[in-house]
Image (cartoon, one colour):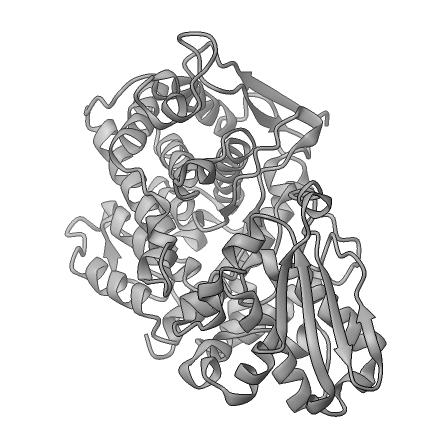
Amino acid sequence: MSTESVILRRTENQARGIGQYAVDFLAGKWGEPAESVYEKVEQFHLDSIACGVSALACGANAPRVLRAEALEYASDDRQHGTPLFGSRIKVMPEKAVVANCSAVREWDANGTNFGYNPARGATKGEFGHNDFYPVAVAAAQLAGLDGRQTLKAMILLDEIRGRLAEVFALKNHKIDHVVHGAIGSAAAYGAVLGAAPEQIESAIGLVVAHYIPFRAIRAGKQLSDSKGASAAISAEVAVLSMRRAMRGFAGPADIFRNPQAIFCLFEKPATPNTSPFDLYLATSGADFAIMGMHFKLGLYEHQSAGAIQGLMDLLHRHPALLDDVAKLKSVWITIYEPAFGIIGDPAKRDPRTRQSADHSMVYIIATLLRKAFQTRQAGWSELMLVPQDYDESSIFDPLTRQIMERIEFRHGGREYDDKYPDGIPTTLEIEHQDLGRLSSALVMYPEGHARNAGGNLSALLEHKFRVLAGLGVKDVDALYRRFTGIAQKSAVEIANLYDFRIEGC
């Protein structure tokens, strides 16, 4: 099967074009994605389920609050409601989506994209995460789709948000990256449920005109629930906007060329009545955006993965590093922007909340070292960061705090900046009393990165699933079977996909 795409030119109504693309893609107008694409989206979805189950089992605040809120919106008409994770109770779909997406995103431990496609010159480098699958599942449950069709809706959603991330950098304008996910969510939800392209256009217009979240939600010395729930809230308004549009509410048209909307407002095109970019969207084959997305192998901000890999490499090559923590003199981490400004922010040297700790490079590396010294083990599986590593006792652990004081974080300048977002360019060095100065050398593609060729990903993802899901279910094997082989599941099985028990929820 050849790889093909449609091109939505900057001179045309791209919001209407996304709507038409979404409808045609689900109808199979151009053929099918390759099997490797279906397999990859199932991997990302499975990973997101482990994150969501564990967040609910651990009583994380935002998922708990939003789940309780959702239960207040139980659907009187059961045919028009969708269930929450671990529940048979059906609630209004936008409330199921906000609760479920919040659980998935809470740990900041699921998939990531960097918005980087040099083959097309689309390298704006916007972040994004695989937070929005509950939107596709909710729509599939309402429409009675089978498993393969449900996965195709997930591919559609990720294709739209992933390609937008390649051509428009929201972060450059202090706008949160979830806007691209909201646009993809509106389109996928509407297309699954039979919306016309003009209705999808209206929903996208509503999202962009009424619901733009700025990065204020991520600013401050100690981050709040807003950071973790941003994708969930945007997914909620995307579904709500699509439902309104399907009832006849007309939102702003042609929003990508609207001079007062974020796209043309912040990146004014040289030619009037155009948007700032052309948009390529895959139709068949293997070149879908999801194939370039990355996994996190534990709870950490994705831009710390290079430093984690560098540490793992040094511990593997020099086991004597773990003989005596007193002999660890210094750790130097050299990295690129924007990582230096985000996870190297001086305010992050003293994290006091989990949301700040998992965005603190010094805390992440110090915690891994503390675990390594205490267990005398090294490796991604052995040291995988889990929710317990971000509880109060861990955040204020005396040994972790001592190690944090020995870590220096520095910007590598253009030499490093130019290598991102192709990779995660990082060098980690350790000064040891007996072993001297040790260097990881430059790390570009750590474990979990789409271009990592280590071959350990499947085993590490399964380990991660079992560790996280095991916090919330007694029979992890049964949960694993429930969320694998999705393409072979019937419409009835998809309708009952969330019908499992989460302990403590």
